[in-house]
Image (cartoon, rainbow, N blue to C red; front, side, top):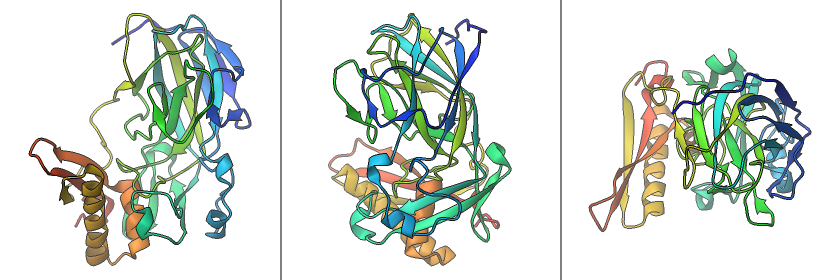
Length: 321
């Protein structure tokens, strides 16, 4: 899928130009021609409530009314309902720090982790760098933004917490530099916004947080009148998870008649494996699953049971074992 791009100006969106709902009544902060580039300076998903010197107290006092803000919206000239907006991820640069947390009441195993926890990461080498989880465990950076979306066509405000047909909190780790995302346009101008920078994440983001980080994001926004998509679709920049897909994986299965419970079982088994094999605490194992373990639907046709796999890339361990 190719398209001729406009080589015009670049506009800049600052970190204080944010909103907390998907709503077509929000006035755009800028207007561009199709094919032009927008640069975003984004705070982390907590909206600046957590910093590199924060302790677990920051989780205990987190103001959820400020979580998952998005910056924008940007009006794209010529965009009309029924068109598609092509979002080319031109560049993503995380800050030199990030955080992962267990937030009580949030996450796939929320009923099993009632106490808050916070991990502050030091990111070395930027988008192509690494962050150490514990000695001997290094996570390669693969930055993306969890929140990418357009205003809905229907009136009224929608929370930024879930994903929708028009995008939103998709938390899709494969929308890295070079990827192209296709979003169905529901309102004139498309009204594009983004936020929620992640320096790295496992498929599933099971504890509810990735390596959350401030992000400098650059995107090219192009109206596609030759393409219609019913829900978000995307083209990756290349093979999946290239920075971790370099060694064997250890996988744990979850099997059962309920998809969510099978997924919970797979993650629970992986947590137990990490505790037993690498002597991690249960809380550390849960957070490591969220930032590095990929969930996969291994089998969906042999009723009555589903089979979900949790895949641990052994390349993150210094001995690959």
